[in-house]
Image (cartoon, rainbow, N blue to C red; front, top):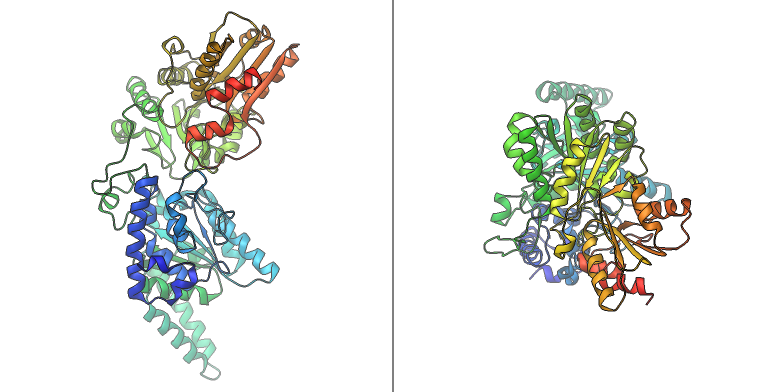
Length: 617
């Protein structure tokens, strides 16, 4: 096994192309075996095996730094940079992250859990190297799907005009998560480059320059003629217009071609784009046939490709089904997503209304998606933008400026709200309530059950004005006793016999709080329970209920600073509350990868910890 001999990238440089090919086969087998047990991003990593091996063959990490855009395609990089023996801990608590992390390895140049940041980060790293007098190249590996993100163009523009030796590797697999959309997907030029072309170009230029007096002029004339011909044939090239030397496209699974073109890029000492064509899911037939399905996977059976799945309906599925049902009755409803058709449950909507022009996939462009939705709203339509909480963060300015100032009525369907688990810090949905609630006029709903989600969606579409966020977690609803299952779009109050202790909460964590109430009752302490469904703005009725208690405990699955709990407590004090008020929330930290239940235990969100908080243990 060649893979077992690779302790660092230096070991790759000793291998010939035949050995490198064998290494790639072993890496694919390792990826499939490991991810089948841990879950994770499969298709994207299978597509970048040769690309990663060639990068480490030509460049010398960590002197040369590789920045992985999004980072979910960096599993091979982890295997080749001293983390092979820990690879079976991928995405597990205390194990390897599913994304690059500087704290994990010196070979991870920059964290990347969201798309589009690699070029900007890479240019910063390269400029820092120059200012400090350090040697080495910087390579930004960015997928064609990430080029639907506006930040990529900001970086492209600045890196191109800098004339620094920035190397951008465009990994073109014609996919992001869902199929790529937009003009760029159609634009990517098919300009072939070969080693023989480079050699001929260098030889011709060197020979002409040796001709006395006229040599330099001939080179200039030939260059001008070549540009004119290329302009005629290819109608220009986007990357060259930005100031880059464009090399490609290159077969992303041909090691020799990759190494040659990367060597050329390294020699040029100026901004370069290397266009590499890869096949997402390469080497595993199930992922090749359906790369979207195998983009992010749970555990699965290798032979059949069958993934472990829950039989219960998820919040995402119920959202998609309900929106589709409502859209049948109301032609003004439109659905918008940012390359997340399957993840956000919009497949039924797409199948029924996609051909009618009411479904819009804007690519990985959350900021555009929000402002586009505001434009739809301005024309009297009812847009629903389905987006993960962690990606909604990228559209804060648009929600504030483009939507809220003039009170455009649109719905933000905020999926993956709260703890998401194994993807770790970059994907936890803990900040949406805190940052959205700072915006005047916004309304926020956080249903605890699937039935409540349906109620909240109708309420958001037809009973509210302005921007309305309906947030819900990944997976299914919590297990609840029958007496606490009655859905409400506003709040549910369950008074106990005593009026001294009140527990307040909302969303999925209501399940743990209910269990805590039962545990407290078993131990002889009767408490009351208040569940919020509409969490912002805070209704005065809720304050009146809380004012009757001497001890109030608020449990919130979100960041503490700016939380509903903090706002609620502040309003209580303003109204003369004299009792004690305690907040259990995520306090000034990023939450690392772990299962949801393990994360709950660490944060004190499990029933036993909530009980201890109330009784003072």
